[in-house]
Length: 177
Image (spheres, rainbow, N blue to C red):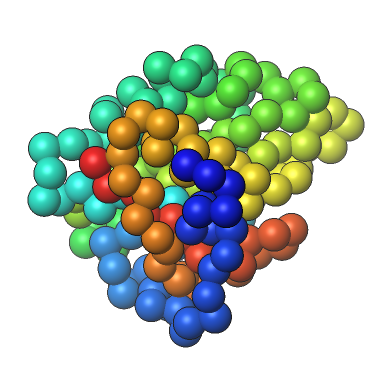
């Protein structure tokens, strides 16, 4: 996919189609547990509507596995809101370019909810002295290219109300088998 065709490269200014966790089958945020419940930490920025296909989370993860991403990296535990169960659900799959990320890495966490996969993709800073998020956008675009190369359809974006620094503008990439 040419860089100028990346759906996340030139998003429009439309109003968010998804404003709350109950608006769609997709997760909107990933959450971390606290003593008082859960707080959002990072936005979902890639979704895979799979209900009308024979594909699932395993097929999504297989694309990352084929390009050498590690399926059990060192990471924090995160959750997504499951609107049908009305509870937070532990991440179901994860992958990263490197096991630890000493100098940074691209990293994803995924949940399959209601026939759709919600992915939180980000680029980590170096693991020490203070681990953080370097970019959401660069990881989102990398995922677009990997799935395009694997023959999936990168099908534009949908706008969520989940903007987050340093560079997520609420535009979520839609990828179909």
